[in-house]
Amino acid sequence: MDTDPATGLVAALDIGGTKIAGALVDREGRIRLRSQRPTPAREDGETVMAAVGAVLADLAASPLWESADAVGIGSAGPVDASRGTVSPVNVPGWRDYPLVERVRRATAGRPVTLVGDGVAMTAAEHWLGAARGHSDALCLVVSTGVGGGLVLGGRVHPGPTGNAGHIGHIPVDLDGEPCACGGRGCVERLASGPHLARRALENGWRPGPDGDVSAAAVAASARAGDPIAIASFERAAQALAAGIAATAALVEIDIAVVGGGVAGAGEVLFAPLRRGLRTYATLSFVRDLPVVPAVTGTDAGLLGAAAAALAGPDR
Image 1: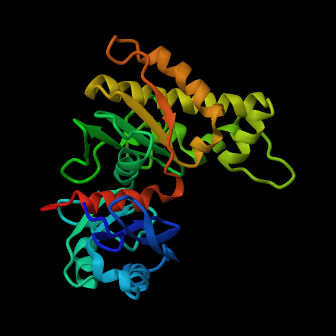
Image 2: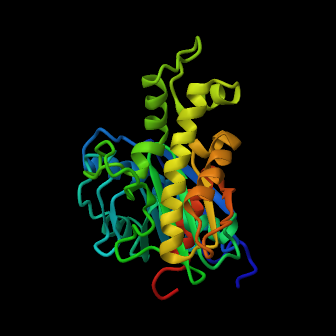
């Protein structure tokens, strides 16, 4: 391994509906340089790509850029890593957009590795976070949506298109509400922040004087003992527990790591989640599955993209 921290860098891009972040990352997972632009999510595809290009230009302006020999991208999805395209639901200007080819051209032909944002978070947690040292893990992002990724046999398992482990679209309520994916009763429809807050409002929860109706506000009410807020988190936790138990039964994971904004609620979420797992994960090989918070925080997307670049083809 290189001992000089200025050598062997990779460029990382974390692309979402709100921001486009970029970084140069060394092989120890240290972020050496950052850049960020707002995502012009309602603009046309070339305008969005121009924001990506601006982030890359910021990185390329540094003397460190010459040491960056590959690029990793973690993008909101769906992504298709086999084709190098992205179609983020919250960036309508990108549909089957050839992001890998465009980034390769913008970075003078450097190799580019694309994964979905859930897989990127998983790669970050396996490299530097709560899943480090675990051979088989499920990592979840519970936020505006619910995403995830898998570690199998000691390696991140993105699947052929880069979407493996997408727990948010496992159906857990056979007669449940329609989901944006076209399915019904998905984990995301029950456990994502917006749907958790919507359910609380529909059941009579009222926000404080500031009018905040986010999942974080519901969590604050739950911590204060509001029974409707508590019930909303318990329902979300039940859906997550069912999805985690199904995944554990299918591929025998040894830990589940939960990150994202909703996970910031702490024990308001984790206590009923662990209770739910005792109900759903009952077979001997899934019983007592540890469920822990993620630790890479807001840098998970960048660190996971860097990990994907480091593990990319021929590296």
